[in-house]
Image (cartoon, rainbow, N blue to C red; front, side, top):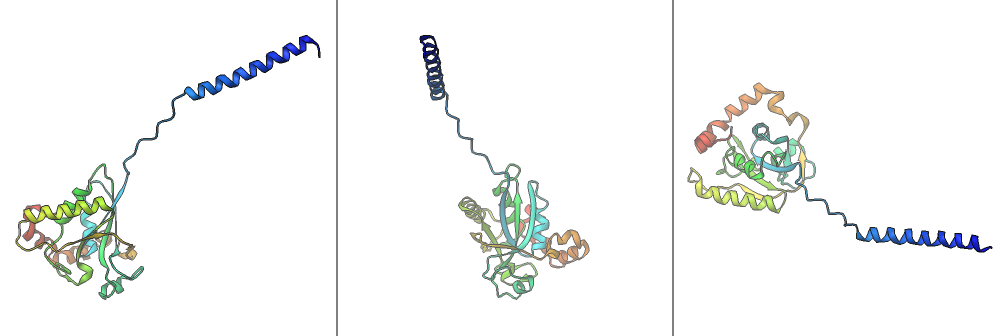
Length: 218
């Protein structure tokens, strides 16, 4: 190999080494990417038992920020129970409604306030004309934050309630939720006449007015 070719080869090697070194230096100096900021969940769940789930579903569908409501069974021991099984008072389940909501439009605390004023929290294993454990009132908290908020709201209500009887509504962590049969979903929309007759004859709104007055959620 002559001197001219050897010189050209050396120049190429030096240029290549310089390019690699410069690239490594630039990469080392470049700022590391910042972690993505934490985002607020776009939806959240709340689950309430307040007697007949037709009525609870109807009441919460009116709340701005609520995306969907599903009638179902929770708080018992039987897996995927039927309405007939729950109605036999042997499964331990309560009729309940699972609510999906937008936290940017309605807070969990606001839902709690609406819930309290849509039930009779003074009756154990009963709501209005419906009697038995499936009709008990329960707040099923989905996490520790909800549990803390629910307990705080109950404590505050004990001090401000417009009635003398104690509040017997349970507050527990949520377990498995089983959607009720399809004919129960949106019952108040599918059967408006029957639903209105049931709600009126059960004196749900009349009793809420007696307990809460103008604060009643209906």
